[in-house]
Image 1 (tube, helix red, strand yellow):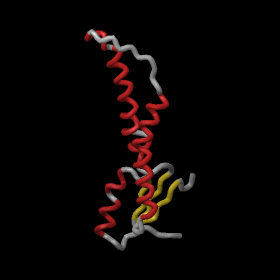
Image 2 (cartoon, rainbow, N blue to C red):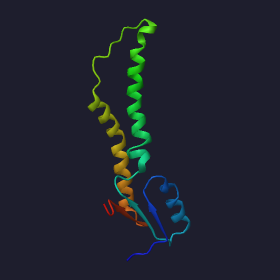
Image 3 (cartoon, rainbow, N blue to C red):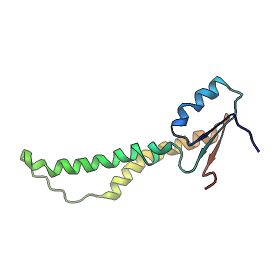
Image 4 (cartoon, rainbow, N blue to C red):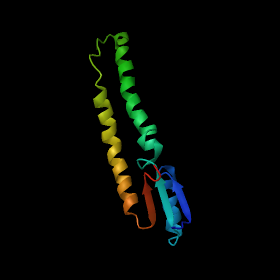
Length: 116
Protein backbone atom coordinates (compact mmCIF):
# COMPACT_ATOMS: atom_id res chain seq x y z
CA UNK A 1 0.00 0.00 0.00
CA UNK A 2 1.32 3.42 -0.93
CA UNK A 3 1.73 6.00 1.76
CA UNK A 4 1.07 9.71 1.32
CA UNK A 5 1.77 12.82 3.32
CA UNK A 6 -1.43 14.40 2.07
CA UNK A 7 -4.51 13.14 0.26
CA UNK A 8 -7.01 15.49 -1.36
CA UNK A 9 -10.53 14.32 -2.01
CA UNK A 10 -11.51 16.11 -5.18
CA UNK A 11 -9.53 18.30 -7.54
CA UNK A 12 -11.54 21.46 -7.07
CA UNK A 13 -10.42 23.94 -4.46
CA UNK A 14 -7.83 21.51 -3.11
CA UNK A 15 -5.74 22.50 -6.11
CA UNK A 16 -5.23 25.88 -4.43
CA UNK A 17 -3.39 24.06 -1.64
CA UNK A 18 -1.65 20.99 -3.06
CA UNK A 19 0.66 22.53 -5.72
CA UNK A 20 2.07 25.25 -3.41
CA UNK A 21 2.52 22.66 -0.65
CA UNK A 22 4.42 20.32 -2.97
CA UNK A 23 6.48 23.22 -4.28
CA UNK A 24 7.58 24.05 -0.72
CA UNK A 25 8.12 20.39 0.20
CA UNK A 26 9.34 18.53 -2.92
CA UNK A 27 9.85 15.24 -1.05
CA UNK A 28 6.22 15.13 0.02
CA UNK A 29 3.97 12.50 -1.55
CA UNK A 30 0.45 13.55 -2.45
CA UNK A 31 -2.59 11.85 -3.90
CA UNK A 32 -5.69 13.40 -5.40
CA UNK A 33 -8.85 11.34 -5.65
CA UNK A 34 -11.77 12.27 -7.90
CA UNK A 35 -15.00 10.29 -7.97
CA UNK A 36 -15.87 11.70 -11.39
CA UNK A 37 -14.70 14.48 -13.71
CA UNK A 38 -11.76 16.54 -12.45
CA UNK A 39 -12.08 20.22 -11.75
CA UNK A 40 -14.46 20.20 -8.83
CA UNK A 41 -18.16 20.86 -8.55
CA UNK A 42 -17.83 24.52 -9.56
CA UNK A 43 -16.46 23.62 -12.98
CA UNK A 44 -18.29 20.38 -13.68
CA UNK A 45 -21.81 20.87 -12.29
CA UNK A 46 -21.96 24.01 -10.19
CA UNK A 47 -21.02 27.63 -10.65
CA UNK A 48 -19.82 27.74 -14.24
CA UNK A 49 -22.42 25.47 -15.90
CA UNK A 50 -25.19 27.11 -13.88
CA UNK A 51 -24.22 30.61 -14.96
CA UNK A 52 -23.93 29.50 -18.57
CA UNK A 53 -27.45 28.04 -18.41
CA UNK A 54 -29.01 30.90 -16.45
CA UNK A 55 -27.81 33.59 -18.85
CA UNK A 56 -29.91 32.36 -21.82
CA UNK A 57 -32.89 32.17 -19.47
CA UNK A 58 -32.26 35.80 -18.50
CA UNK A 59 -32.18 36.73 -22.19
CA UNK A 60 -35.56 35.06 -22.67
CA UNK A 61 -36.98 37.11 -19.78
CA UNK A 62 -35.55 40.33 -21.22
CA UNK A 63 -37.02 39.58 -24.64
CA UNK A 64 -40.38 38.76 -23.05
CA UNK A 65 -40.43 42.28 -21.60
CA UNK A 66 -39.11 44.04 -24.73
CA UNK A 67 -42.61 45.29 -25.60
CA UNK A 68 -42.35 47.71 -22.65
CA UNK A 69 -39.74 49.54 -24.72
CA UNK A 70 -41.71 49.35 -27.95
CA UNK A 71 -39.79 46.37 -29.29
CA UNK A 72 -41.69 43.50 -30.86
CA UNK A 73 -39.36 40.53 -30.39
CA UNK A 74 -41.24 37.25 -30.16
CA UNK A 75 -39.38 34.16 -29.02
CA UNK A 76 -39.90 31.56 -31.71
CA UNK A 77 -37.84 28.76 -30.23
CA UNK A 78 -35.33 27.95 -27.52
CA UNK A 79 -32.87 25.32 -28.72
CA UNK A 80 -32.02 23.71 -25.39
CA UNK A 81 -29.59 21.28 -27.02
CA UNK A 82 -27.63 24.25 -28.37
CA UNK A 83 -27.69 25.97 -24.97
CA UNK A 84 -26.32 22.79 -23.38
CA UNK A 85 -23.79 22.34 -26.18
CA UNK A 86 -22.44 25.85 -25.66
CA UNK A 87 -21.96 25.13 -21.98
CA UNK A 88 -20.23 21.81 -22.65
CA UNK A 89 -17.97 23.36 -25.31
CA UNK A 90 -16.77 25.77 -22.64
CA UNK A 91 -16.21 23.38 -19.72
CA UNK A 92 -15.12 20.17 -21.49
CA UNK A 93 -11.72 21.53 -22.66
CA UNK A 94 -11.04 22.79 -19.14
CA UNK A 95 -11.92 19.43 -17.63
CA UNK A 96 -9.69 17.65 -20.14
CA UNK A 97 -6.80 20.04 -19.46
CA UNK A 98 -7.06 19.41 -15.72
CA UNK A 99 -7.27 15.64 -16.27
CA UNK A 100 -4.21 15.70 -18.50
CA UNK A 101 -2.25 17.82 -16.03
CA UNK A 102 -3.12 15.66 -13.03
CA UNK A 103 -2.56 12.37 -14.86
CA UNK A 104 0.86 13.47 -16.06
CA UNK A 105 2.03 15.04 -12.80
CA UNK A 106 5.12 13.29 -11.44
CA UNK A 107 4.82 14.85 -8.00
CA UNK A 108 1.46 13.28 -7.17
CA UNK A 109 -0.71 10.26 -7.82
CA UNK A 110 -4.07 10.92 -9.39
CA UNK A 111 -6.96 8.51 -8.93
CA UNK A 112 -9.98 9.03 -11.16
CA UNK A 113 -13.26 7.19 -10.53
CA UNK A 114 -11.62 5.64 -7.50
CA UNK A 115 -13.93 3.28 -5.65
CA UNK A 116 -16.88 3.97 -7.94
